[in-house]
Image (cartoon, rainbow, N blue to C red):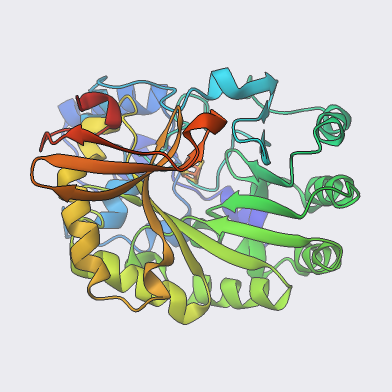
Length: 365
Ligand code: SF4
């Protein structure tokens, strides 16, 4: 079966979910309300990783809708993506990077998605003019890389992916092209059974370096299928980086976080970022842990890692930039701009009074 047919078997309704979970009529009603606003979609591969006997199963929490998503604390645009949008689907926040929202679809829908406002919901913000993007990048010589993201760009046909690669690899001042994807986790068949995709990646990675930025959040996601997909991508010349979202009851134990980062290195994936979970509506209360606690977890986890495994930075992806959580001394928490929207902030170190319950920079004085 090809990957597109495979997707037709995704679990998308509460009725289908009932084959796996006991739900009373009140729960059913509330969950229907949740998925009406933010659709559910779970690939059969990902579903097979859930232990439904365990109500605390981390995969289940990441992918199965919950009544906790009815909490509206937070925002739908925590990083001011609207403010960085130059035209539909193209964002330019950091001078060297152009970001493209290539699709609003994913192979499954994470309940903690920070683009919940659009992913699986609306194509209004999606890019549809490659020529315009090429012109914008050509006119901005300071851009040295393009991040194709979404949604998940690997949901696009191989032909469309090739169009992107063909267009962008011809722009001389681009050094590399990135694709942000969770497809190897949700639907490894897309990589394992599509030799056409692999040959396209191989062809264009000879012209310019291609990076995949994966999102692996828990060791349970590192199945033998994922590992096989990683191997194929590496053999096609792709460099693989990983970003992990630090989340309550998913990976907020030092040993789990350390196991994840150590296993990534073992299979040839570079730890890149550990993200503080954003204060997104329907996500913040359910998934976010306080910065204070996050810092302790990350530091304890780092004590169980070698230098390679702890190359990542623990950061807040804030509207003003990517801000690294450097440390806590007495009652103060120290930060450093790793990437700044305003060049004057580049590398700036600053501190805030510690508040042990704060989950985001704006909650600190
Ligand atoms: S794969 Fe990424 S874009 Fe898609 S739902 Fe998950 S977090 Fe959102």
